[in-house]
Each structure stands twice: as structure tokens, then as C-alpha cells.
Length: 65
Image (cartoon, rainbow, N blue to C red):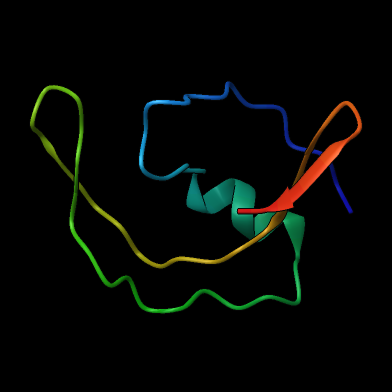
């Protein structure tokens, strides 16, 4: 699997990646339809095109998120 570096935001309810990055990963996991609307910290609406659970790791910790 191709690693993607990102900053962890422990206060957020979800994690976002750009669609271009998701597409470039060429994963077998398809995007599912979004089931919620997201707003930024400033209150702006964030366009969501889908959701997916992906394996994430930090040092020796691994989770699906």
C-alpha cells in the first residue's frame, strides 16, 4: 500500500483526503455514498464525494479509519 503522510487532528470527527490522492492510490476499496454533511472549523460547508475506511498506522499502532 502507498503511504500518505498527513497531520493527525484528534479533535476532528473524521479525516479527509483529496480525491486526487484517493484516486492515485488505486485502491480496491470503492467510495461509498456520503451519509453526512461536513463543515469546517470556520463553519464553511465541505463538499464530500464519498467515504471509505482505510488502514492507518503510526509507529507500531494500526487501525482502520
